[in-house]
Amino acid sequence: MAALYAWLVAALRAAFLEQQYQTCQVAEAELADSDSRFRSVNGISVHYKAANYASAQAGSAVVPAIAMYHGFGANTFSWSFVDRKLAAQLKALVVSHDMPGFGLTQRTPDVADYSIQSNGRIGRKVLDAELAANSLIPAASTQPAKKPDASGDAYALAADATSSGLEGGGRVRRILIGHSLGAACAAAEVIDHPEGIAALILVAPAIVAPIFGKSSSSVAPKEAASSDIELTKSSQQTSRHRIHVQGQVLATEAAAAVARCAIWLTQPLLVLALRSAVRSRAFWQRGLGSAWYAKDGVTPEILDAYRLPQLVRGWEWGLLRFLRARVAGGKNVWKALQSGYAQATRGQAERLAHAVAQHDIKVLVIHGEHDALVPMWNSRRLADALPGASMCAFPACGHMPMEECPNRFIDTVAEFVAGI
Image 1: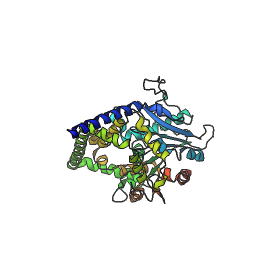
Image 2 (image 1 turned 180 degrees about the horizontal axis):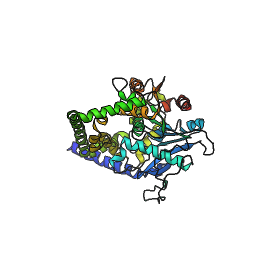
Image 3 (image 1 turned 30 degrees about the vertical axis):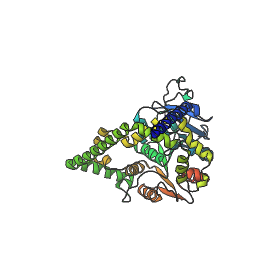
Image 4 (image 1 turned 135 degrees about the vertical axis):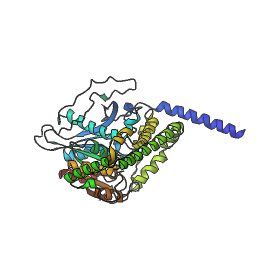
């Protein structure tokens, strides 16, 4: 009886605390900083920040235009150590946005909005919208300005950016920078929409490198194209092998469907687990402590910046949809089947190598020597697999080079950009 009474008291206390916590949650825009911006992209209100030191009147001078993608659990704050200084040093336009499911970007009900492909597109569209707004490329089509809605999103801007691929008369050089999971998002954009991208910078990339060195995709562009054509012809001629590959695709999709179903069925438990973990200051202290080489570098201000988005109404459901999207892989089974052997059997690293070779995209890989989350040997192998890629290792640095070593990060990126 005493045990039952204690359980009821604990349950009532938990319910009361949850109710109190819910009353503290607000819409995304209510947590915005003074320099925050919101833009509708693909029907999603995207939170981002921009630093513009480029000039539309600079004659024929090259204008670096940089889009930054943060990693898992982070937000635009992750780039605040370097974005403005980098923009000033390069006389560039620099934008960083919050990935769907994180930060202050809208938590939509559509799981497809949380895929790495969707986030790759969002970063590129935000960049092109800012380029157009600053007269650095021709303006894209815009939508009428939205009125503030009941959620208090009075900051949403009117334009729904479209990626025109224009180069602003040859002046604009688009550069994508992705950290950890954000590197996979930037790579997805290069793979799917490589036109108009001059360079890609991968920071502690969460991209699995090929096991056996350079792939057939990492040869010269003409050779790579020829190799890809031969591979496609071979797959078409060998129907039995094609059926086998399609069977593998179906099996993978079936396994993903089972995992998605399991997540859906256990949603209440997962939400409770997420709330318990993410609301804990100790959780973030341990997580960021494992990411940094110098543990004492994680200040209370950094912890608060990472924890702030938990005050967004419905943050846990957004994170849950993000996890579902990761299980889904952002793929449609019919598209996967139609892509045939060449696409079904190549991982992201190999497809990235092909895109880089075909479009002469420069690549830099940056990695901290003491990264405890993503092994540096993977980045070295990835750099070897990407044609013409260079590798830069930061000593006394962990998983967060742009936060732990901001000055060196800025100098390394600036030197790389100057050589494009």
